[in-house]
Length: 259
Ligand SMILES: [Mg+2]
Image (cartoon, rainbow, N blue to C red; front, side, top):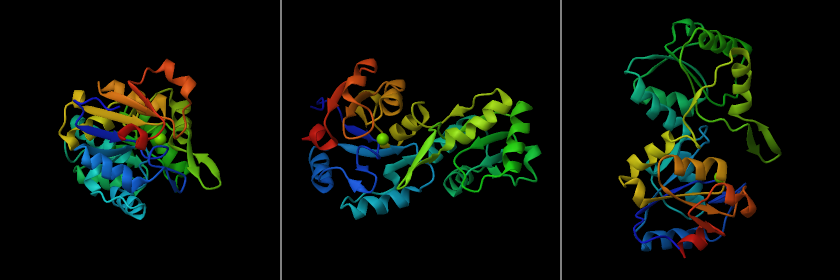
């Protein structure tokens, strides 16, 4: 099913590897098969709250050994994107959690406290479970003053065991509503996370297959950088929606794709 010129896979996680707390299929066997076929792989997720090490641990619990280097998140994606645009030492006002903070600090950016927000040269927004009126007010003032505005992802909701809660995109809508400004987005369907994944893999876009369960994020992101795309039916999007997006391959699951 996978064309012979493909050397690497960029894999989404939720809906491809697991669904909620349950693995999809026999993951150790699937990854044994991927390794037997000589395919490199990285995981790419819009979820920026967890670190690569946390994903490594979760996969290990499912019997799949990977290195943290094989995980790219929207937090790493936004740091990668900003490092292409701004020099080290740039002052950033951030609404977000440790995942984004650590990724930005590793690129040499200075993260400002809310009190020092007025001197920011860029505003970065991700999910922040200690968001406050003051943080949103400072971000709004900066964006209205023309300071460049970035976000990890625009996913409106975030899955929890009890259901969906407001995601990054819902909080973002407060600022876009107050400013009339749309941010630049690091996560899927935009290309930055895919570019970071390709850099980690060291493969060309023509040799890399992007695998995902959401047409409007995963498949669109793969297409945005010129990779081949594989849509798997183990997650959110439905088969009848695929014609609008033209993925190169459609498979029941990752296991079926690499069989
Ligand atoms: Mg998914």
